[in-house]
Image 1 (tube, rainbow, N blue to C red):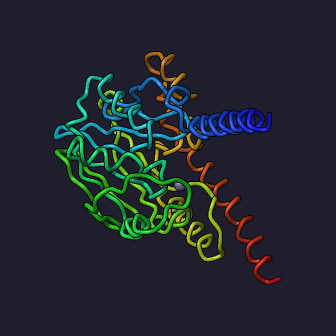
Image 2 (tube, helix red, strand yellow; image 1 turned 180 degrees about the vertical axis):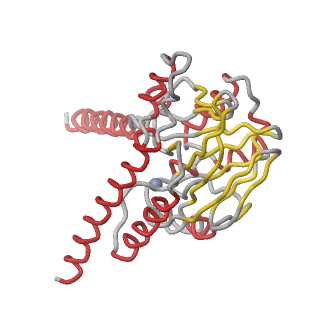
Image 3 (cartoon, helix red, strand yellow; image 1 turned 120 degrees about the vertical axis):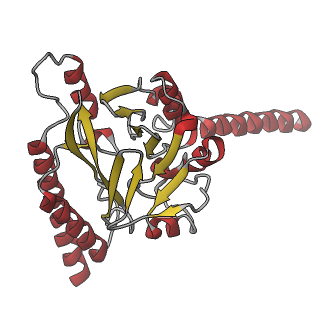
Length: 283
Ligand SMILES: [Zn+2]
């Protein structure tokens, strides 16, 4: 009788262990490619969205190959690779991967791009250094150190030129990029701010972030916001408008006013955060 009870409770324990193992294996909605898949789409003559729902990846097409902005992570990397193929391009043509910052959701697929397609990964020195220490949020395969870029760096690929800016705050080495997109041959100045979220702490870092946002505000000539999380630029909403666009309509992504207004909001939020942090530090 005692033996049987032990056996029953052992069986119960096994079931419990197995089910908790299954739970641990279940992907969160953010990490699940089935829930994150977005059909890739073209936004400008030379710019395509190949990202997931919550985190973006963009392809800039040049006459000498492709430049990929951010690499997604985990199983979501397939979304970018499949997307490039679905759009009629070849992932083997990815020459560079520009990693906006070294958090898993942007850097996670970088090593795969190096290994499978021979892409060169670009990041700032400060964020390369982040790859040497324990990741804050989620682990990822560490890319080999390739190119280091920062303020004043640029990249020429064929006739395409990109200018880089180190805009720290979100991480110590957020990388932002300025480039040109074309709407039926007509050029527009685009910008990718590489680290928007305020999920970091400390007066010094918040001051860095505020400086970065002010520098972006000072540029004054950006017409197109290309965000690394779609929500930072209403990418999907604008794409719906783009699909309905008729001859003579403005391009819904060419919207300098809303870009400026967005930067104002980022600044206000960061200044609030700074006040709270300064008050907490004084206590
Ligand atoms: Zn981040």
